[in-house]
Image (cartoon, rainbow over all chains, first blue to last red; front, side):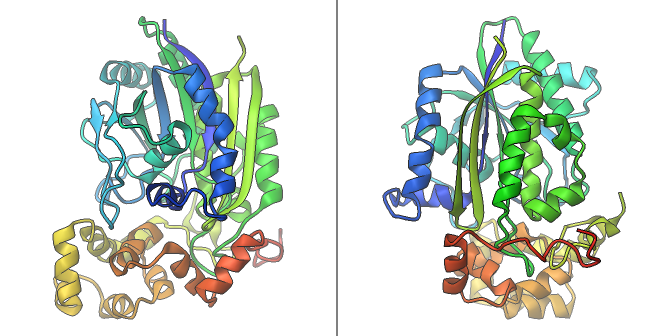
Length: 280
Length: 128
């Protein structure tokens, strides 16, 4: 039987990928970030998950505004890195797990979550930067990844509660998959940041810290929080944090926080990383 | 939830349906820059390339002068208009700085010292 063995929350700042790809990891702007992720990188290397369900958002790469799926699951067996305007990142092609992805799609749709199914999708920094942070720079990725794209750039975005409930439905789906697989769920994006307008550069350390505390101990407070509050406190792009709730929902009520890391800034953004183990 | 939900938050663009309508062709133009061939054509003659799209003259002018605030005010989505900056090889930080009238250096220094404090920037009405 497939099992969810860990949940990880992580920022997916594009500039982190650019720094890594350009070999600037020792630069004073970036060294503290890569050092801060060392614990999680070792954890993932030791855990050796078979599959990661990676909750992220596309940034006008795979999806234009022609079609805006609220939740889209990648069922393909491979996903190439997208050209985001300066050529694709030089990272390996991401390999999917078609059978588990289709099982999840079938299970959650019958569970009344109407996912979009995609069999062809390029993946941008939202997906590949967390992989680089957690897996380093291998020749080939050591884990299969099921991309779960959430619309957070065209309002209306799903509610925080809906994201959480989707995580719960994914947990039911994984549990009913017959093959013995270790599955991690990663929720990505955030933390507080805003790229445009007079509040560009907004960082809310106090709120971010409370978000991490509540994600561990009181996720209900975050599920019921309005979009307006997310934007007001974490910035217009800080809204991405609702995707961490899908990860949290997938882990179930009893969890242990194993690790957390917080740093300001990575370019325009506050960086956060948290690792949970489900109740054994 | 109505499009007015976010109007109490100062200096903040949330890309609602209303903005999507206004920016439809502007954002389509931006998306076209995902292709290297289109980037080359745009760079060769920006005006001629812009005229292939059903954008308003004001939107085209905002692209030509790289006025990102004007682009967002006229329906641009931040992740789409950033593709124009990518064509120019201009970092996101430089665009972000321009919104608040800061130089890139001033903005980067602000970020290194903890970012922009939300105090006083939460609510126009003063509710928060």
